[in-house]
Picture: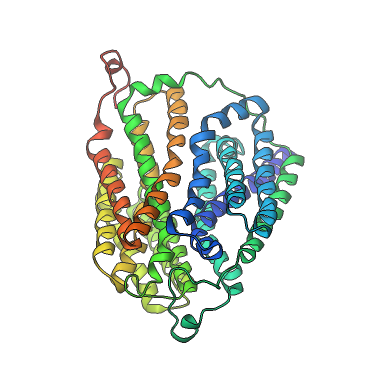
Length: 474
């Protein structure tokens, strides 16, 4: 029994590291667009192709990856996903040495394929690495590590890529730079983080290959067409498309936006990237608030204590991220408290919380388009807090009323719509090139309006057809 417990603990450590890795890699790629634009001298649309290359794999490989897992098993699939990520990391060396942007995008696509396979194969292991009654706690731990990774990824860019850049004269004098500074970041400056990722992932892959993990049964995939009779599943999948697209698009555009003197305040590149980190940290803080609000803790006083600890954590994160600035840290703290208060208004109801947060996101994105300076900056950065619980709420509404087999199938369909992270940022880049990066936020506004529609109307629709109406209630 002792050996079995030790095996489960070791397995949990490795699976937790994997959640951290693919959370880190995903946000790192999202944040990389601005340095890539500068290094390869690209337009917004061309630079935002970084996200398109990464997220297109969700449309192409989400369902096929399920077949891979069924064929070779969960453990081998995890090893394969890690191996693909490591190989992709090393492929950035020739891509960057030849300064080939298409080669660079190809390496990103291979990297994302590894992430998709990992996401498909890791979730079942978390529930099996211990007693069933503590499975939710293990899932929360892995998601917490994933969220911490999304906060740290932009800070790695600040630490490894930006210091290597040749500083522009304007920045040296004023601390203000344009969105793209010729002669600043070079392609070679992008390489160190990818080599670090490749080596770390390879070490974890070798570890996974030689540890014992529980053997999980391979269930049949079933017929995906059965879930298409439910309107709320399809409308929810579109909601996931809009949510992921808006979240990734905003995360991609922030650094280009806030460095412009007439728009986001004209902050330095380093501080701009830290605001990107704060945007993703907002999602982390909001998820912690959500976990408290939706927990089965009966005592209200205990909930307030936990919420207070998260408030303290929000201040610490803001203080560390924003160069120990007390005023900016308190501003972030204020938005975090607002996030918690509005979550209480939702009273744990998925459609109500989703509606309130979608409305706030629309207001914030619109404000950022119509204003400038600190108001515009904080309006767009604070959206991260209100993105925080959108995914689980959209998902829960989309699969409500389905039986166990249908939920599994619906999840496969919904995961393919994560491809919104490839499409929406590209549309924002096109608008940014044609008009201005500020006006590209109209695309996320449209996305959040659709999410509002889904929360209020789309999630309440009955299954399509007379026979479907006799099925599970939505």
